[in-house]
Length: 392
Image (cartoon, rainbow, N blue to C red; front, side, top):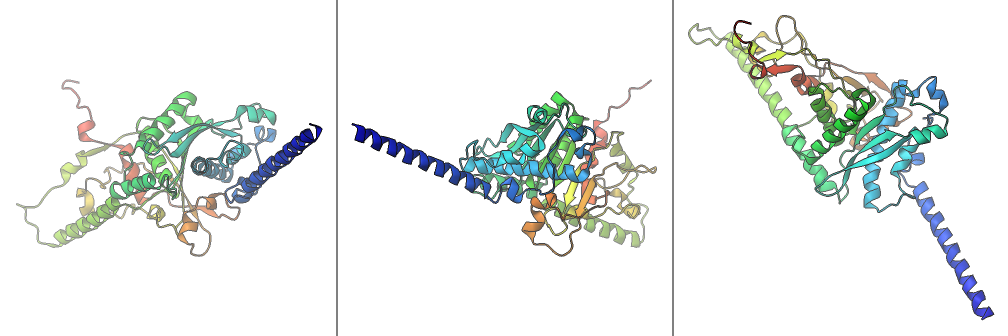
């Protein structure tokens, strides 16, 4: 019996040693994973501490951009963790939140395939207290809705591409189940914490959703800070509209050179009443663009202020209000100025936005595409205006 007991002890020790080796192996795999935070994350970004109560890092635009990009990366990794059946111990996503004192509160799942396309993140007060941070640093949002872009993996690729094609065809994502889920999530935290304390962030397809969700809330008078990395700008609808605009301008210029006929000449005076400017506070999203990325580069096309042809005033959609009024549609465009032509995957990649050698410049604010997308925030068609009663 003593011999059997010794053998059992030896077997238990071998098994325990094997478990320790396996645990260390799995830990090593996680630590060497290309998406691990310490491998591919930002290098020179300090974790918040009590000093931020005096001089908040969140007031630095570069710091805020870096953290927002890391939040989106965390959402990409939440879906990868799900597909690879990772546990809490070896998950990759939390490591992209912990350094900034944020935590995952809720995942946003696509009801069509169960994939994670977004997340609600909140300031982790308990983690902050462990570093003697009694209050949240100035400029740090209380909660964030982060949305990922297309993930070319088998379990989610179909639905991602379906929404990509939806935008390509219609320049709108409102028909997607993800739109309503993201809108409800953002509206929920804005109601809970106040619109000044929350923000929405996205990359690629996720930036497209973030822009349209933020715009939908802005129409309700709820302005939420938005950070959009490589937002999609190319669509068939936009291309056809641009072709139509150019054809219309050419035809109107041609007509202006023809002899006029007072009996057949068309007057466009009535078109000024088709839309009216409304005095809302402007909603100004932050867009991060790389000119080598053909998906988002159209945002740098500048609107021709003051150069519009008089004959173009008949175009109801793009005609500007008279009497010196201007449509207040603007965005903060940050353009990557890294020298040299980049390959598409590099130019469209999220990791460039937390890179140490990133060079940015404030680009044009009067983007033609932004004006088209946000114009409806500040104008109303005549049919939506309440007609005054007689005698008033």
